[in-house]
Amino acid sequence: MATCLPYLQEQIAIIRPKVMVALGSTAIEGLLRTPVQVTRMRGQWFDFHSIPVMPTYHPAYLLRNESMAEKRKVWEDMLAVMEKLELPISQKQRNFFLKPS
Image 1: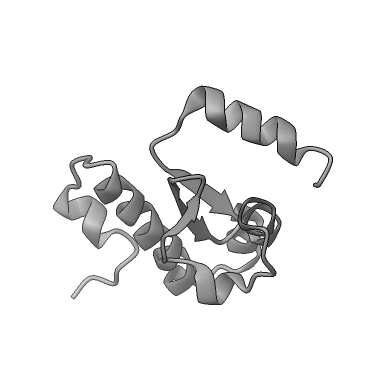
Image 2 (image 1 turned 60 degrees about the vertical axis):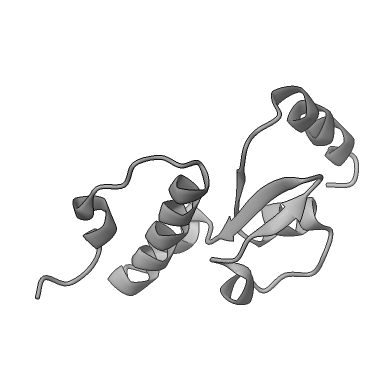
């Protein structure tokens, strides 16, 4: 990770993303340079060189864990990313992974 980080930082500087999503502990730890507990960090905004970073679960975790509640957490993280980017969010998107009432 230490070897590749300078290349990643250069790519990020060239692309200048408006936001980044870090999928899983390895990505979060690599970007934020801190030991992580994804369950405590996900859903909160962090900063990487003035770029907002949303940590969330790695897709492999969601494939192993079939809980709709866990999938909903990642969905909420993605909704927060969409809000940060000022993208429109439909009511259907807001209600996805929620049990019908």
